[in-house]
Length: 120
Image (tube, rainbow, N blue to C red; front, side, top):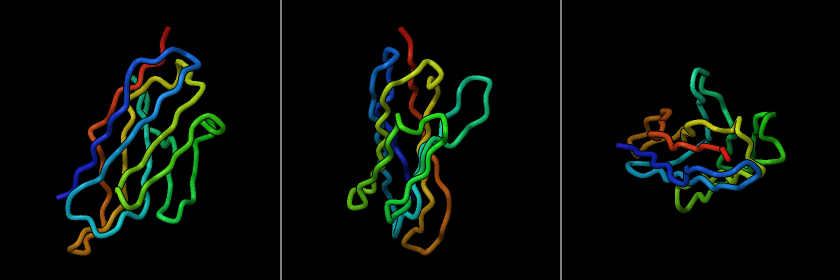
């Protein structure tokens, strides 16, 4: 069984910074891609950023230059550093991982989500 657990979401003022973390645990052989998605009320879930095991990154245009994704492969952890936060960044942020288990099953997994609210 595989679990993704996010942390770090909270209320922050516009212009502030926040760091999200997501730890993957369980019967993991290899994590291929890890990413962050977000879903605001009334909107579809969207990709925020992703990172491969080799460190290649991809960002949504709306967060380029403000957010940075990174990962620690030894700890099966992915981070999202969010700077210059805007009210429109308010959403539930979900961790996602494309991974292979020790039984060599490859699948896509989601965390339970963490709320980020940007408001004065």
